[in-house]
Length: 199
Image 1 (spheres, rainbow, N blue to C red):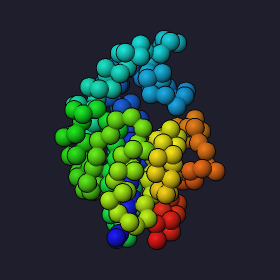
Image 2: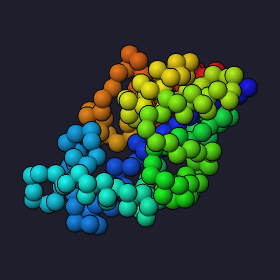
Image 3: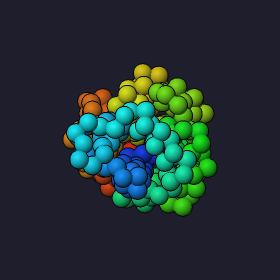
């Protein structure tokens, strides 16, 4: 059986925060990257308190429904997956609102990520365990969020886990545990490490 690579979308294949930031600007709001938390980084210009969390989530859901296709791909991601696809089957595993299935599928195809994709909700360990059980080959998983990586390590310990944070502004703020989940924030560095892990 071919090896398997499961890959997150936002801040791994897609520059999500950059895209959401552009969307917020169209609504007269700004993103200040002060912490590794989406809604607590949204502000009205000139105000010190972040936007109400419920309003931030409302805008987040609208973005996924109407404008999520307006996101730039992470540098080198498409080329890396094309190369890795010669060795492994690739599945895109994203946590996103259900209404984003169509827009997200179009974004993936448009940007050269035409692989099977699954929309998940909550910790990703169970989904990774279920998908990786379909192959007897080696498997790897890439995500930006430490809780998802820990979930996979707990539920599917045979799967190699790697962390990536595509937006340079978020990198120093992201929770990481490199002793458990090696971290490479550039696809040029990460791709050969994945290839070796699933060989």
